[in-house]
Each structure stands twice: as C-alpha cells, then as structure tokens.
Image (tube, rainbow, N blue to C red; front, side, top):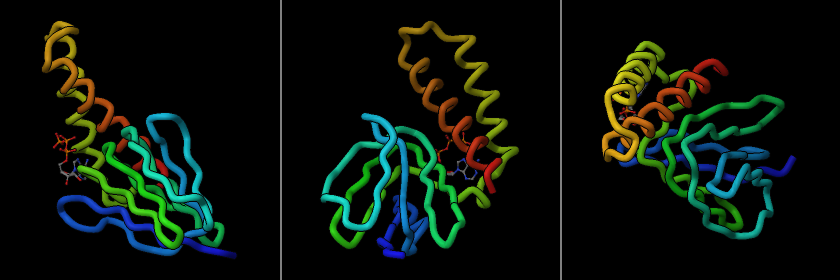
Length: 134
Ligand code: ATP
C-alpha cells in the first residue's frame, strides 16, 4: 500500500507523526479524504476528528480547528490543540462541557462570551466523541 507522511503539530509540539494510507478530516467546506498523490492544497479545519488509516487500523486525533496543508509527500495539520484519543482526559472534557453548557444558559446569544462558550462546548463534545474511539 502507498503511504503519505502525516504530522499533527500544535504550539506545544508534535502530537502525531507517521506514514498512513489515508487521512480524513473535517474542513470548513466539508469532509476531506487525502490519499497519497493528492494535489497540493491548504484548507481551514473545523473542530473535529482526524482519522488516520494504516494496516487496517484507524487512529483518531481530536483537533480544535486549524489548517491542513497537503504537499506531494507530506500532510501537515497545524492546530491550536490536538489530542490522540488515548490521551484525552474524559473527566476533564466532561467538566469543560458542563461549564460551557452553564455559560450558554447564563449568556445572551449575541454576547461575545456566548460564542466562546459555544466553541468550548464543541471542543469538549469532540474530545468525548474521539475518546470513545480508542
Ligand atoms: P479546558 O477548559 O478543560 O482547559 P479547553 O477546550 O479550554 O478545555 P484548550 O484551550 O482547547 O482546552 O486546550 C488547552 C490544552 O489542554 C491543550 O494542550 C489541549 O490539548 C489540552 N486539553 C484540553 N482538554 C483536554 C482533555 N480533555 N484531555 C487532554 N488534554 C486536553
């Protein structure tokens, strides 16, 4: 099987580095599947899961938005935060979800903090969903 090198990088350092057969993720424009030989491109990402397929196994990484860059030999995902499914602290994500839900109940929809709480809620839900796939 042909492979392509994938790096998931955050300000705290690399989170994932390996050769995979396919990487798929959620771009702002919709689901993106990248196979070796894909044309070069750059795309902004949603808060979502990155799926990395190799040897009939799939690894999952939760990313909090960021950018995907495809080059001939390499895919780079630059994210503000990213965690492999096995590194996700479920209790922490549950607490973050509760906090965000409480803030959403307390805030008016047009308020700046409402949008912040919405993003926090989406990050927490994404982490919980990726943690279930370990
Ligand atoms: P919290 O309120 O729990 O900090 P958050 O969504 O505000 O959640 P971020 O600002 O996205 O957190 O991330 C801060 C750092 O903490 C990043 O390095 C991120 O990878 C890590 N992180 C956040 N939540 C978790 C979690 N549930 N498990 C493991 N690492 C986490």
